[in-house]
Amino acid sequence: MNKYYFTSESVTEGHPDKMCDYIADKILDEYLMQDKESRVAVGVFACKNRIIIAGQITSNAKVNINEITRKTIKEIGYDNSSTDIDYRTCDIDINITKQSNDIAKGVDLGGAGDQGIMFGFAISETEVFMPYAIFMAHKLSKRLTEVRKNNIIGYLRPDGKTQVTVEYENDIPKRIENILISTQHLEKIDLNILRKDIMSEVIMKIVPEYMMDRDTKIFINPNGEFVIGGSLGDTGLTGRKIIVDTYGGYARHGGGAFSGKDATKVDRSATYMARHIAKNIVANKYAKKCEIQLSYAIGINKPLSIYINTFETGKINDEELVRLINDNFDLTPQGIIKYLNLKEPIYSSATNYGHFGKAYLPWEKIVKI
Image 1 (cartoon, rainbow, N blue to C red):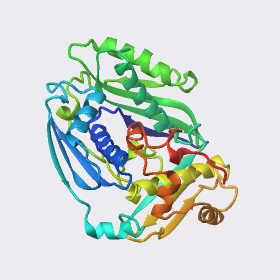
Image 2: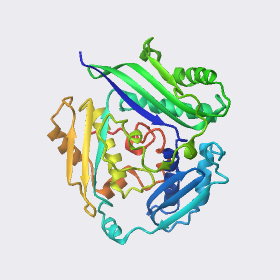
Image 3: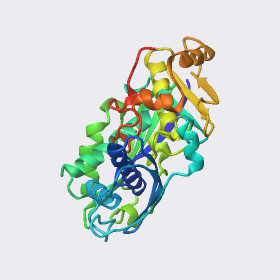
Image 4: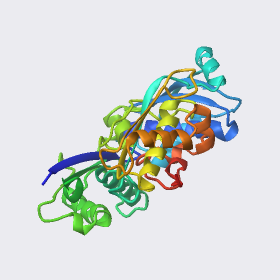
């Protein structure tokens, strides 16, 4: 019997890195709402009660970045500079220039906006074709935010993290070995009450009973109090949660971050396309597990290489699957943008709780191959 454990983590939208991702994607969406041809590459840094926004934007849109940033921080729930950050009083520094002409000339001709490698992955062990550990970690993080915003547990604050360890037998998830939840809270909250509330309103509402047993270990705020959070407790930066954004470490990642970038940046759009193809290979039952790699060169309009691995679960060989991909999908940057309709302002809806596994996103659509 092949037995092993695998762990993945997720974070709430109030985690300082995710706050930065969310601000960046909100800015991107606003530019696309006004001008679908906008070229956007924005990064956000948060430290204490200060937000720094920098990057390159070429667009005809007129966007109030300061206003969008404050609205986004408010939406997350941050309003206290003594424990995290306050949307009303935080300092916002903006340093935006236009896209480099050297990059633009390649993109204008339909080429990739950068070089790089991108991976897509899918597996049949969950209904959304995602690995079980990251699937559960995202659900717990999302529930943690829901109970806070809906005042079910009214003393929680926005910052939080979850982690799930799954026991596998013969590559099948059999049970959950442990669950870890760390959540920010108001001062002077009894930790015993907090742990009881998180157990009953978060864990027991999300995790199937059959996946837990008496040996499953639960850790809730194991370090004790968690009052200081957000960018006061730790700096935030766009793109630092790329493993949370993808497959929780279960599959490879090309290294490029997503948030704040329009679809001409293939480290975002081609990663979405690789996921779409991998998911549909599994959904069409060509394999139970599939990983795809694409590579691009700046200014070149077709991928330099396509790699596929079905981990000996494929019904046809991997070389035939590559031919199937080439016959069914246009992998040029403009072809991907058109096929997935990536000029629409949809990006902030993907920012939190994983960019994959959400049925409403265009790259998650199941098609017949």
